[in-house]
Image 1: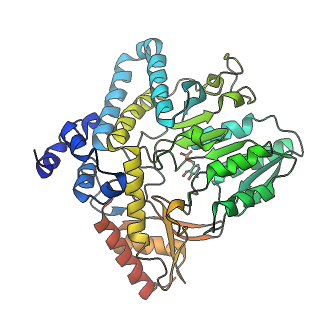
Image 2: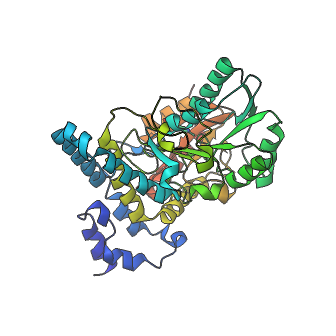
Image 3: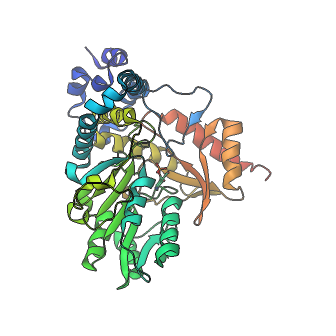
Length: 420
Ligand SMILES: Cc1ncc(COP(=O)(O)O)c(C=O)c1O
C-alpha cells in the first residue's frame, strides 16, 4: 500500500492503531524534524479530531478536547462504571487506577511510587505548597509570570503562616540560560524554603532551563517545585531528568485526556516531608497519602490510558517537533514586522507550541475580539505581568493554512487598527 492509500484508510482505525503497522513502518526512520513538515502525515492526525467548522481554534492551551476515538472510549468508560455501579468501585476500581498510574509513571519516566493522579495542576501544586511545614519568616520564591492559582496559594501561606513571598520577573528574551538561572539565584536567601518555577510560562510560551535552575537551587539547599501545566505531553522529556523535587501537570491540556485529570510527582525522598491535606491511613513515606480523593469520577482516570495511547501513537518527540514547527511557521512571519510585538523568546530552544503576539495601539481584549468576530479565529487575550497580546496555542490538528489565515488577519489589523 502506498502512502496516499494508507492515509485514506487510517481514519477507520482504532485510537491504539492510529498509525497502524504499515504507516509506522513507513515513517519509522523519518526524523521528527523532517516529519514536522509532512502535511499528509499530519492530515491523518487531524482527521482524528472533530473540529468546529465555524472558527479556527488557536486556543488549545486551556484544554484540548479529545480526538473522537478517545472520546468514544471515554464514553464507554462512563457507561461501564455506570452499569457496574458500586460493584465496579468495590472490585476493580483500585486495580484500574493503579494500572493507569503505572502507565503515566512510565510516560513520565519516574517510579509509580513517586506519582499520583490528581484532578489538575492546581490541585497538584497547591498540595505541595500547603503540605510544607511553614514557619513565620520562611521565604518562598516565584515569578510574577507564574499562574495565578499558585500565587494565590502562596499568598494564603503568607496570611496563615507568615511566609514571605519573593518575586522575580522572567525576561522576554534572555541572552543565555545563565541569565535565567542568575535571576532566580539572586532571589534566594538563607531563609528560602521553596522555589517555584514554571517549566513553560503559560502567557508567553517561554520554556525555562529547568534542570540548570534546579541544580543551582539544590547547591543552596532549596527544593524546587515545577509548574508543568503546559509542558507535559507538549515537550518530550522525563521528569527525573529535570532534577526537580516536585512536578505538577494537567493532562487535559497537551495530552488531550478527559477534563479533570492531572499528575503530581514527588521525588521519593521528599514524600515524607509533606503534610497531606486530607487525613489518610497511608504511611508518611507513601505518596498515596496525598491522594485521598474520596469517591470521584473514576471514568476520567480510565480515559487517561486511551489519551496516552493516542499520544504515543504519534510519538512525543514527533509531537514536540510538529508543535514547534507550527509555532515558528506563523511567528517567523511576524517577528520584526512593524507594529507587531512578539512576546515569546526568539531562541528556538526557548519555546514550543505556544507564542504570544500583540499589536501596537490595540488592547489585547480588542485584538482577541476582532480576531474572532471579523476573522473567525479563536485566541485568548493576555494583559498581565507585563505581557500584552493574544496567546496562540495550535495543536497537532492545526494546519499551516489556518496559521496563514491568522498571519493575514494580524497584518490586516495592524495596517488598519480598530477603534478602541
Ligand atoms: C502555568 C499554569 N499552571 C497551572 C494551571 C492550572 O491548570 P488547571 O486549571 O488544569 O489546574 C494553568 C492553567 O492554564 C497554567 O497555565
